[in-house]
Structures are given as structure tokens and as C-alpha cells.
Length: 404
Image 1 (tube, rainbow, N blue to C red):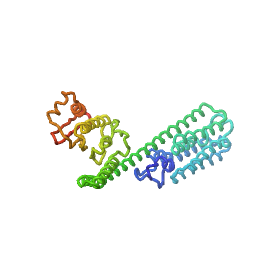
Image 2 (tube, rainbow, N blue to C red):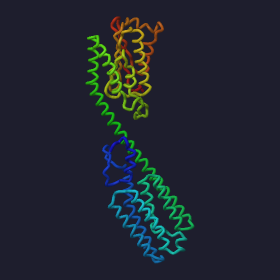
Image 3 (cartoon, rainbow, N blue to C red):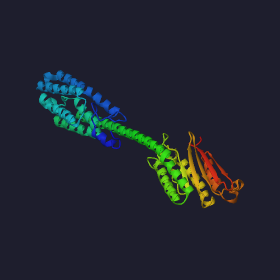
Image 4 (cartoon, helix red, strand yellow):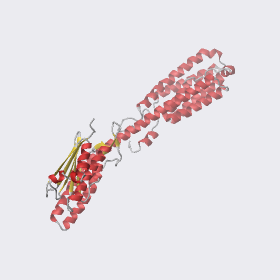
């Protein structure tokens, strides 16, 4: 069963509780457990209710006007109830037959009992058996079906008695509560099963995407990177080919490293919004910046991920402003069990370590505040390694979760 249209398929097979062939390949179920439990219990309720109605008829058959009518109704209800024990598939037309039998049994009370007994509020022939079709409608079609059938049975009760008494209104109220509440429970159960199937489908899609990302990373991306590097070494027309390969490498890398749900935040078990750090860092890739990311999602709490990305942006800004016009940068994201490490390296002109350490005293706060300060606020740290002519390397390591 395709999961992309799970809600529509659930609507199509609604009521097909037993003996079905269109079960989900992921959950192995065609209906939620609670729905099947309701239906199975209802199958045993019907013959029990028909037997109880027969005992009531037997107890007062001597005072009836036409007792044979009452016994005929009870026999039909019992036969139908036993038939449903054998025929396990539930459909709307079968529900319509059940409702017709319940309504017919209610009106048959006018033939079986004396008019004065009916006016006095004697029990209808089906008694509680009629409530079974209300529950059956709720199981089959949810709260809407339960309330509609409850209204039909209630209308038959009102027409049968003529002038309703307190007991009649009490029973009608119970019918509406029964159909409405069980219907709501069934609706919620079906919705939960649909959501669970969508979660399973999304997990399968993520695993497949990760598998393809690994294949692309290990093959196509490395080949394009090799073409780019060799093109730069050979020069001439080969350099143009290498530039095209680098452009395609960047586009393909962005595609395979994006989360399949886009930039939409995920939700962790604790309810905090999380984002894939690869999406944020992958956006920095460009002509002068190469990005290397893991093949699996790197989820961080959204605020921590944005702060870490801001620190990385500051490091790349330093490359643009101070490393030289021809400088290139390489960004590497490493995913550890309890922390993440981002390394930003460039091949620029570099700087004296002492000059970099005293930059904050001269009012240049890019390294001390935008990079080191942010990493420290996140509970981690940042190391800046540089030397004249040797470029600069910034290593930022922060824990996945905020320390208690």
C-alpha cells in the first residue's frame, strides 16, 4: 500500500475489519487495534442482546396482543447476529440492513403489544439490540456515522411511542453519547494509525536518501572534485572544464546534504525544535568555499545550530576580508556522539599568532567575540591556528546539548 496517499486509502477500506487483503506493508494492519477490538466485541454483543430481548418477550408474551410477531422479530435478530459472527467483513450496506432490522423491530412493537402498553412506555422488542447498530455505525464511519444512526433509531423510538416519557428521552441521550463518543475514539485511532504510517514512510525515505547520499559522496562527488583539481593543475581549456565540474559538485553536494524535509525544523523527543546543521553549513558553499559534510543528518537544537552557524560565518568573513583575494576556504563538519566539530581552513596570507591574540585589544572583536565567544557560550571552545604565509585554521567544537 503506498503511503503517500495513506489517508485516502484508509477512507477506502474503512470498515473492512476482517478478512481484508489491503493491509499496510509497514504496520501489517488494515485498521487500528482498538477498532478491531470494538468490532469483535460488538459481534458478541448482538447475539447476547438478542437473547436478552427474547427473555423479556418470553416474560410478558401472555399479555401481548400478537406474541408470534415478537418471537418472529427476535428470531430474525438472533439469526442476523449469528450470521455476523461468521461473516467478518463490515460494509455500509450491511450496516444499512442492521439499521433496517432495528427500526423494523421497534415499529413491530406496535403490532405485538397492546396500544395501552405502548403508550405506557413498554420496552420495544429489540431493546438494547438497537444500540448495536449505533455502535456499528460509529466503528464503521466514526463519530458522524454513529450520530446519524443514533438519530435514526431515536426518531423510530419517538414515532413508536407517540408521546415520549422521561425514559424515552433518557435512552435517546444514551444513544447519542454512545455513537458520538465511540465514534470519536475510532476517528482518533484511525488518525493515529495514519500518522504512524507516515512516520514509517518518512523513515524509509530518509534511509534511502542517506544511502543515495553515501553512494553519490563516495563516487560522483569525488570524481567531480578530482576533475576540478586536475583542471586547475593542467590549466587552459581544462581549467574551464574543472570550473564546470566544481560548480556541479557544489550543486550536487547541496542537494544530497539537504534534509529531505527541507529547512523545516524537526521535533525531538523533548519537544525542542531541531534542525539539520548540514543545511545551514551547506549554504556557505561557493566558488571560494568548499564544504564537506557527513552523509547523515546532524541534528542540533535550533538556537544552538544558528549560533554555531553564526560563528562559522564570522570565520569565513575573516577569510574574505583578511586572507587575500585569491584565498580559498575549506569547511569540514565532523559528527561525534556527544559533540560536533567544525573546521574552517584557508590558504590565505595568514597572520602572526601574537597579532591575532591581541586583536581584541585593538577593537577587532571578530575572532574573540564572534567566534571564540560564541563557542564558549555554547559550552565548547574554539582554537585559532595561524602563521604568516600558512593560512589560518579555526576549529570550533561544541557539545550537542547545553550543559545542565
